[in-house]
Image (cartoon, rainbow, N blue to C red; front, side, top):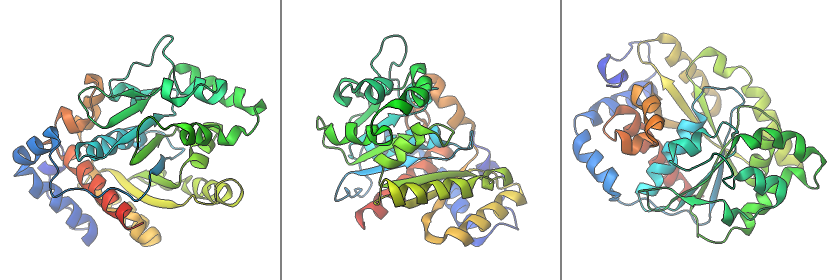
Length: 309
């Protein structure tokens, strides 16, 4: 059972955070009906398609802030509402591939060969089992060596972008790139290929450290390599309503970044951690959990925002 639904709201929480958490709690009362609709893929009012493919890099050089969890569950939620989504696993750990039940061991063609050997992306992308409209480009441990091997290659920063531009097998609405916890060449490739950056921020003090460096890198890439890149979304993750620190971090992020921060916050949830061990996103593993419902709301916000671009 998710933690946040068992605890009262903190009197010190900001109004926005209190509103977001209240909506999570109230939704739990009707979770069974909503969950059934989500699993069956039935749109609840219909989510709009973006006017063009949105390529979103999920980046934060700090580890453990929820990049992979966010990439996988947002992609699953979007696909459940009729949108076509490709997840590009750019992390050598391959956790996104695991969560999407996509084979990424042995001699399986992966993103490493796309970046280093110019293998067409169409030979790597696999449909995710039991999730219509959801696709995954897996990563193997070989990707760990790509940082070094890319150094000597021509146009090393734009190799992923070229591969995505050449991919025409499926008309995609979203491409979500799960970045590694670093600011190396893999992350640079993701940001050069993307037109949006989504930053998950853990609601703890350390999560704010290093954010400035990431934003400076985004500005540098925008200035020199990808003029279309912009920070479109910040998602607050691992929110624990029992702590004053979580609400303080949320307030600070909202006051600094304003409307870029999603109204939905992602609570701490055991189900979010359990789901990948079953080769699933939390959206199918336990769609009635607070984590699943929160990611569904976050995906809805992103989809609605995309229709206005």
